[in-house]
Image: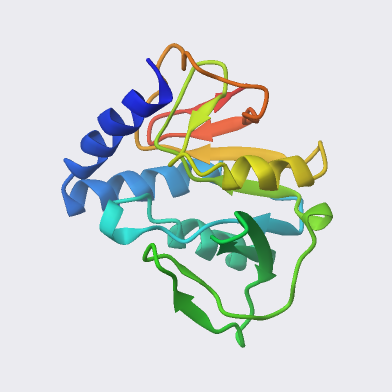
Length: 187
């Protein structure tokens, strides 16, 4: 299937999940992340969910990162220039809801892409080769191109992979892993 068609299918699938199902699946994904050999790094980039779009509750993984005394790095999206900047989450970080309903840092300590060691990536669906379908803005692909090649790229999905996304381009960056409620996929 093409990305545009997959977006429609998986938005609908995700929207059909009950709040209870979404919470339980998010917990399973967070617990599964604990089984990964990724916790020896310092800087973990992770997004806050768009709750009205029934996204995975990443606050559970944020708690894990903080509980391991690691740095949480949050994205701030510049929609005009189509870029993501990164800010360290501290006790002093002021969060604001952006135009898409995402909590993001208003200001704070900027973190350069070179310092990101692990990045958790939002997606709607992914395929068996590690490519993903997001919302179509390309923000994360642009961010991933700026990160060091050894940065671990980890997708988070409620659903198992499809066989193939048909319209992958050279600009689509593959993930290293994707965590679902039932399995960790390694690419």
